[in-house]
Image (cartoon, rainbow, N blue to C red; front, side, top):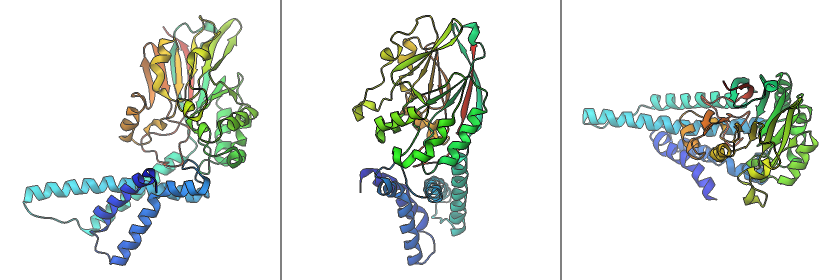
Length: 374
């Protein structure tokens, strides 16, 4: 068993010790529940055994949903049990006597954890609504005033987000009325052979100025070259360290994209903004697609007007988002001003099926309207 799997066993072990064992149940009942909790905690191990990767659980969708619900309930139960323990400690300090937690309280806490986890999974797996935002751009050409684009990111098309879900997202995107659609990485979880049918609806994405995209880190986990060819065959115009010009008459906007920070670890070209902007006109505003938000300061220093990123899933859960921000240079969700540049970090259209809970950080399809800065 790897360190990765041991880490995920810790919440279950703590729940067994602090919540389960004090219950007045027969030993065989506690043992059965303990085994079940440990089985659930190893969801990522079972995922690896099912597909060769922790990132692609190849179970029926119902099973994937149940695993996410049960694993989420364990984590939430641990948090709630720690609160109960702190409350019990406070009472003991006041009374100067030992106190116990009634079984009824423990069962109630477990019920609340199960309900909260169910809500979190339901929030995570729905087809997200549009989130409308307006962004001011310095020196935006008048011809682009009111220009609208739709950002999709972190689709993670998989057994959890299958063909039916992808079709609903495509239909909604096509009805958005935007000029341009961009996808800022993490299209999939699984190989081309695993996901061929599930990603097929992406072929029908349509916008007047096209559909442009960049890879995210998950594309590198499943044969990057094969996925780049397949996504291009679906009509995605990939921008790995490259740019195109969006035009309205003589007016221009540079749309640039870079590869992901994880690329060098997979013997692929890492993000190179200088290469992406080589030959771009200097007087045109730059919109940059970069899956991870961590390099926003470097983009701002190169004169980028707007950077669109994902990767963080918005932190998924209020409170947990602070921890996610620490690993992403402080950027986790929404709009940031970075050295005169606007960075927008989407919560994501979906998220990794290994921990599919959202509480207070809803998914989104981000519809962005550009305006000239006053």
